[in-house]
Image 1 (spheres, helix red, strand yellow):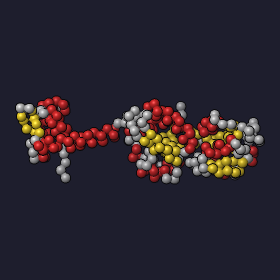
Image 2: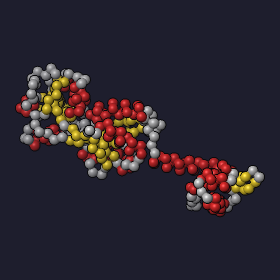
Image 3: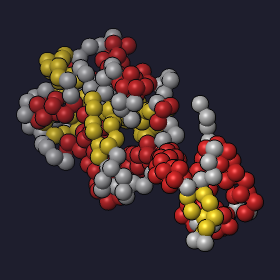
Length: 298
């Protein structure tokens, strides 16, 4: 298949528009001999003069007139590819970003993110997906742009950026009949607990830590999401162990009391993860920067 340099198409377009080799050279910032050489290459490629001199300047031959539309379409397509790969304007973009996150991340991030986008990127949309065992494959395939949360399985093979450290606290209803003042380990183990079973990897830290101590809590309710469990706790005498940032958000909206966890428990790091396919994408870089600014520890 014959190929043709994009620069030759630019020369063709300018000669067509300016009706002059010298004026085309000025428009392109090239010496006139370079434009004349380019025109000679075009004529050789198409086996046609393409332009002829008249009293009205350089006018296209019938083939030259036919070529101008596909030439301009090709130049526009190349320009779109170059602009897409190197530039992103959030103020005019209609891009819809797809983010996988836990219910905690939704509660902590989405209100802040929406307010930021409303001011700086009003046309940008967000589609939220739950974190799951399929998240690595979704990142690899491009079905998801970004994963946000504590996701140890994404530590290897994916780019990552730390956002903040998280620690656990205990939370009960303000009207809890037994827990008042200070929560001790003995009482923690005696109480009935609401446990999270499928909201990312963080909840596993609690029981793994207790198991290493030779202890076990009494789990009375297993529920998929922190948010649902928290509302149940407000209306019952169940105890829940949840990330501190979530507890602070909920305490401002409900009748809760927060206590320190009565045993040493590891903190964990919340990160954003992405695949190599989006590492250099200008739009994705912009989104990651926005999220980092909103969530990164000061």
